[in-house]
Image (cartoon, rainbow, N blue to C red; front, side, top):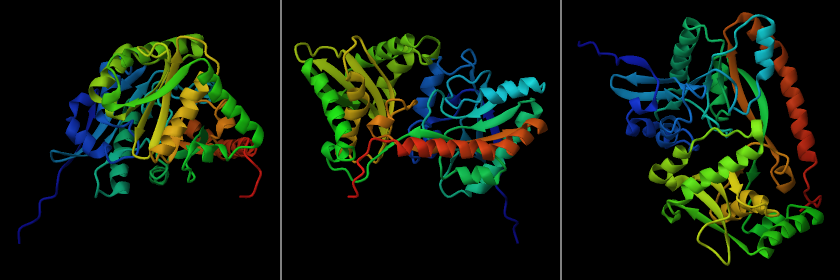
Length: 393
């Protein structure tokens, strides 16, 4: 009887995604709901100098191979700060400093600068998810302990993958995002029907304010998008970030936007505001991505201060497009001040954490239940205050 030869597993840490063939990586990433783990998006972040060691996002990806076949990958980054994450762990960093623990660098799993749910390990179809995740976590633990990394953190995780990480001993921290969901809308008027009479009037007034100044919003995607709009979108993005100073979150370079035309425009959706008298170049624009039945708002900007254009370009026009194209959920991006007034309820998202310092890990486990309860109560209060009609339809 000939003994069956067992396949050889090997793990490889890489410092740039280009070290993995695109077809091999995308065989794992394309089937996922999120567009933000695909090879082109992540590679664009790296080669545009947006996510690099210099910016505090050192790529440190983990790959798992069976013989010469890639069967799993984890986009990971060594972080020297907490900027660009939108999960505010500064209190943990301050606590670490008080007890004499070096918090940075830390190992982070998320798509840089992208607070959108969907992060997970990329695992080939047909593999045992728990087994492969366990192998990856073992490698991560060994790496962090060897290099004295304070902790490993996965942000905005795929809700279906979260229990797998919890079974590996990671601790869940509850957060919330503002997400529009299509509950059977056929028209934009169906969406308006959710609101009380006062807010319906407000939304109609805001859209009319844009029309009154002679602006027309046009949705452009894929090959419809002129190449010139990508550097223009960077200008809008940069100008908007500059208005907020230190809090502006200007992380992406002009090169990043320009590269999207070449290799990612099939996922890009612009809402461009043109003057009726001059349709050569938009005066404002919002930048979204879509994949399957999910839409994601990312950035926006305008060369002029135009009343209500932000609301129309970032919320109403995307919702109208989403309804027409069978989109089931729309994540408009970080922040909530404007979103909850426009039908975006607070929905849970989760991060998962492990500290390699026993004192930090003990404190995390002792207090996280109370922290999560307070977050759940905040979400409930937000959603009870949404301007929806009280009718029982």
